Length: 549
Ligand code: FAD
Image 1 (cartoon, rainbow, N blue to C red):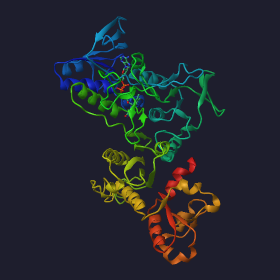
Image 2 (spheres, rainbow, N blue to C red):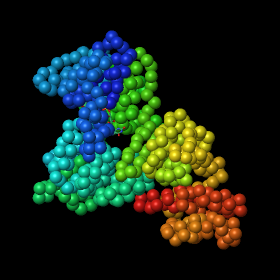
Image 3 (tube, helix red, strand yellow):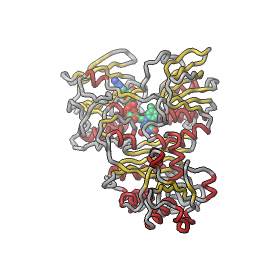
Image 4 (cartoon, rainbow, N blue to C red):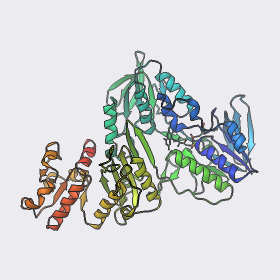
């Protein structure tokens, strides 16, 4: 078997080494147009500030190591220009000599990745305007950032843009972020990103949400950015992080099918429309694990796993790719935000009948030093309780909870399974009722009808004349420090003795700080014949939502 692989980083390198483990006798050739294979693109932003100080640490492997350990013929600085499906060969160009040649294949695997999107704007090709994909890119950005400049602007508030932002701030630069959506981090629901926006502001970052660049121009030696809002910025370095698009040109020109977003179409075995040509990674269209919709989800984990699965299939094993859940995480300014499965926005888009709850637990027992609060939101089927998605923001412990929920989603588990989950516990690691259990208890209680709930944005959307009475059951001191407009305060511990002050004919909405005392109040009121629901996640959820309504 002669296997050719195009692209020598995440998906391509994984496929090549897996292929060798399955077949000692095959001829495996890996083509990479760049100078490096198997480098850590996820680590690039951290090289900028020196958090990762040695460049060579980003080079996970090399051409020589692939030859010595895996007997793989790696051809760096070699670009594949054409796939000739009739002749079963590719046309390769050695970029050093300029010589082109043909190489035949029995099987071909494409892992060419995705390239940074560059909008067609006046001035976009200016000298100090960068995108980030490769080691060479970060070398150039680092040189510019350390040339004595004082300011930088990130265009695009996604994962890569924000990671770069943190590293620029660490270098002592002033920074602006321009994001055309009304929120940062578009894969998340807007309210979950509020703490990230606050962290940016408290680190001196000027955030321009709901705004976009219309033009770059020369501003007396600096780069001017004219924004849609009419505002103008002047900066010394611009980094574009406005998304990526699949590198599917080779595939398109070879007549392979691509999807609406340009990703190469593959079946569950990762075969393209030509069954002897496989494709993996950022270049392909995947099926969203939860909604089943075709999606483009460029992440390292899926690319690596797909590379392995494709190699398995090439060598006769019949393995299927389950789809991509979009499990992703960002750490910035001591905050962590993570997601898995469907967002609420995505469920709305496909008209899925879901419910959601918010909890705001500590990552470990409150009496043990260093506990940090997180917000955890779970989305689930309104009838079966099957988990559909989860997002969390906070500090410590966010990664662990989203990883647990990722597996729960993959295993088809429900909120009732979260109630029963047995997780490791000692005070420094968790709580006897872990945040996962708490989310399950609240969601299970909601579905059983024990605990009617309303989301804060649904409550706020009710027109004034129909609005239920809003009852704040926190202490008088907490109430004085801030409350949802229109609320009446009766502290939980006084509630039983003050039931006479509440309406029996019309509904009541209660809330507390995080939802728990509101739940206790809901149970008291329900059992005393009142119509009541509780705001999920309480005042804390209101604070998250306030700027997005
Ligand atoms: P790539 O890794 O991009 O590799 C494709 C390779 O193919 C490239 O080296 C390219 O030069 C080569 N190639 C393309 N066309 C040709 C051709 N015609 N001939 C020869 N060679 C060709 N993901 C995460 O999950 N977590 C993270 O924290 C994270 N951080 C990231 C940070 C940065 C700065 C970047 C850029 C990406 C990050 N990602 C992260 C995304 C992750 O790196 C990608 O999802 C993953 O690398 C995709 O793997 P791939 O094999 O599809 O493509």
